[in-house]
Structures are given as C-alpha cells and as structure tokens.
Length: 342
Image (cartoon, rainbow, N blue to C red):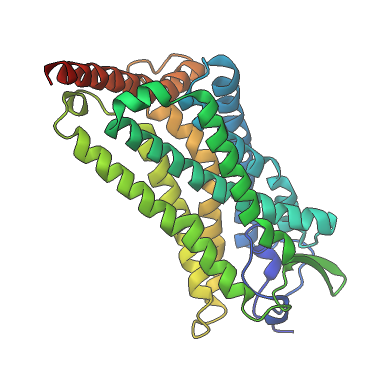
C-alpha cells in the first residue's frame, strides 16, 4: 500500500491539522527503523527532562525560596504552565515510539488540551507582564501605590481561566479512531465543515498575533518613556522579560505559519506534515528554554559562574523587580517634587 502520511509521527505530539477523512496512513508497529521518528523521540525526551528539571527548579525558587513579589508571581505562573506541558509529554513520546495510542479517549483529549493551555496561558501572561511594565513606567506614582501581589494573582487567575476556555475546542474535536488494528489519537473535524479553518485562524489571532501587537505597543511606550531617563542608560531593565517574549515568538511563529499554510489546499499534502513536525518541535522547545534564560540573563552570570544555580536564578528573576522598584521610587520622588513647585 502507498499512503501519503504517517499520521502517528506528528499529530500524536502536535495538535490538529487534518481531519480523519483527509488522512491516509502507513502502518508501522514502531518507529525503530525510521531515522526521523527516532530523532523526534530523542529530542522530545530531552525536552521532557530539561523542562521538568528546569521548570521544577524555577517553581521551587520562585514559589518557596524567594520573597513573594509581583515579579516572582509572573515567573512562577509561567513555570507552572511549562511544567504541566512537560509533565504529560511522556504519553506523546510513547505514542510516537509505538504508533499506537493505548491511553484511552480521555487522555487523548486531555493531552491536546494541555498543549493549548500552555500556549494560551504563556502568551497571556507575557501580555499581562508587558502591560504591567508599561503602566509602571507611564504612571509610576499610581503603580507604586496600587500594584499588589493580590491583584497580580487575580490577573494570573483570569489568564488561566480564559486559556482553559480557549483550549476547549481541542477536547471537542480530538478523537480516538481504530485503524488496521491500532488506535490513533487525532482530530476529527468531519462534524463541521468550517471548524478546522475557524479554529486554526482564531488560535493564530487570539493566541499569537493580537497578543504580540499588544506586547509590541507596550514595549514601544516603555522604550520611548525611558529613552531620556538615566536608568535606561545605566541598567538593562526588563531584559529577562524581553528574552522570554522573543523566545516565545521565535518558537511559535513557525507552527502558526505552517498551520495556516496547511489550510491552503493548493499546497502539496505531503509537504506540510513533514515541515510541521519541525515546527511543532520548535514550539515545544519553548517549555524548557525559559528556565535557561533565567540563568543566563542574570547580570552576574559571567562574574559568578561558579556560584550556585539557585543564586543565578534568584538574581535573574529578582533583577527586574529591583530595577522596576528603583525606577518607581525615583519617578515617584520626582513627581512629588514637581507637584510642590506647582
């Protein structure tokens, strides 16, 4: 038999692309003889190990070792999102290696839900942090008095609730189908004619494009405001946050681009699945890159290379908070002096 796509090699780990009626299969009991499949399994194992360890350390430091602050609340939430994704990754790795989904329909739906929960929650948290930085720079006196940990927790909770709601379609359309003696965990859009296009486009707009336009706007305002400020020249404020945003953009842009390309029926059907494997792999790598950024973006990394990992992460996560606090204090005092003259 000559089939066009080995569905088990990419949709088991990624998310959604072809309907069940659109896909034909090559049946492989395992991927032990395919170089690409073996490489994908190995890379995903590495992502799992680094993601669990790295995000686990960040959760431990931000949640239990450092003093509670708005800054640590943001990073703790990001780490929890990435940790959840990595924690359930072995189910997909096993499926990728065996080409047979043995975990039932609930886990099939749940795994897709977790991936999109991670995507939405990560980008929404980055939007919240960017907006928080922008407000703090534009209205320092107000921010000094009104920014609280409790309000940060409320914003984080809203981000998680909205992310969960937007991830529900992955539960509705995910299904387990039997094919030639094996089970496939895949997306079945056959019940609705335009559901595939609607979901793909809405995920791109709500989960990528619109949030990044908001982030770019916030950072443009911040740069403009700080350009003439001495602190902008003497320190590197917000650099960890900037690195997180750029990393998310670079990791998820290929995936969204390829999903939208897949909607174009004129593109050869065999091309998209192959490149989409690489795109989804890059997207998943975002889950373990964040803890690495916390370490290497600290000011004292090179000077204190032999210091502990905990110290490096504490420095990286606390640096922005200290910078922002200094800025708020300085701006508040300047505004106070101005008001006296008036």
